Length: 106
Image (cartoon, helix red, strand yellow):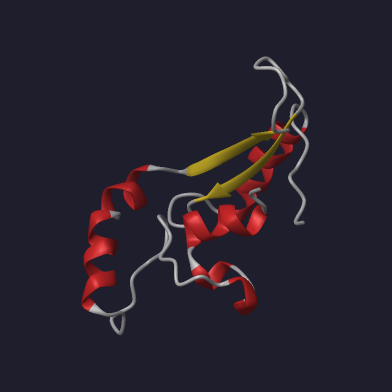
C-alpha cells in the first residue's frame, strides 16, 4: 500500500523523506547535483521535460477491492517546487481538501 513517503519519493526523491525511508530513488522533480554519478545525471536529463512542464502530481487512492465507482478516495498532492511556490501549493491543497481528504502518513 502506498503512503505519503512513496508519493514524495516518486516526485522529489530520497531528500524528501527521512533517511530510514530513503530507497535510492531520484525523483521526477528532483534537481540533479554536480556530484551525482553519470547514471543519475542521465536519468535527470531524461526527466528534464517533466521538471520544466508538470506543476504537480495528484495521487488518488481508494480502498482496495471496492467497487469501481467508489468515491471514497484519499489524495496526496506533490507539487513541483521549480514551478509552484509554497503559498500557491497551499491554496491548491485547500481547494482540493474541500473535495478529497488528505492522505496522512502511515
